[in-house]
Image (spheres, protein in one colour):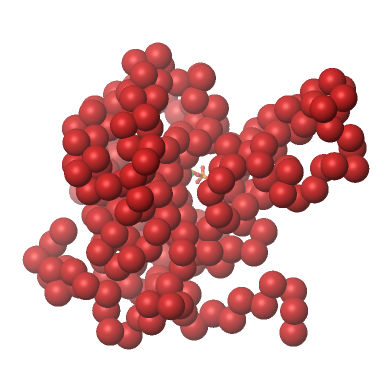
Length: 249
Ligand code: IPE
Ligand code: IPE
Ligand code: MG
C-alpha cells in the first residue's frame, strides 16, 4: 500500500456499504506493458502484479467485500514464450507458499478454478494444501483462476452432465441453469457483480463467460501493477452509479 493510500484504509465516505458489489472479479492485464515502459523484462511486471493483487485483497477485506476472483493465467497463456510461462508457474508457487500463513491468520479462504490437473505437480500440491488449510475461513472468498478458460469450463460441464444422462443419473429435462452452474469450476461461488479489466482492453478474453451474463464491466487504462486503492475506489464509484436492470424496465 502506498502512503497516499493509507487514508483509504476504511471505506470511503462516498461509497454506500449496502450498494457495494458482493463479488468483484479482475482481469489483471498490462503487466508486460508496465515492465516495458520501465525498461524492464516482462517478468518484472508479473512480480509487481502480485503486489497489486495482495493490496486489492487487503482492500476488499478492509472495505467489507466478501468475494474476489482474479484471472491469473488463461488456457491461451500457454502460447507465450516458454521462459515466461515457467516464470509464472514458479511465481504462483512461491507466492502461495509465502502468503499462506498470512491468509490463514487473516481468515481468507483461497480456492483455485481452472484445469488444475495440467499445472506443474509441485504447484498442484501447493494449491491443494492452501485450499485445505483455508477451507473453513470466512472473512473473504478469494478465487484464483489458473489455467482457466470459460469455453473449456463450459465444455467440461457439458461432458460431465452428458455422462450423468448416459448413466441414467439425470434426465435431459433436469438440466436447468442451476444444475449447469453446479458443474462449472465456480460451483458454489456467486456470479460476479463487477468485473474490472485493467490496461484498456475491451474484451473478456475467455473469462467467466457463463457467470458474466449480467455482471457489470469496468475498464480502466491503468496497467495492472499500477492498480491501487484509488483506482479501486473509482471503479466502485462507477459501479454504484450503474442501474442494473437484469432485462426489466
Ligand atoms: C497480464 O499481463 C498477466 C497475465 C496474462 C499472466 P500481460 O502479461 O498480459 O501484460 P500485457 O498485456 O502483455 O501488457
Ligand atoms: C487475460 O489477459 C488473461 C489474464 C489476465 C490472466 P491476456 O493478456 O492473456 O489477454 P489478451 O491476449 O489481451 O486477450
Ligand atoms: Mg495482456
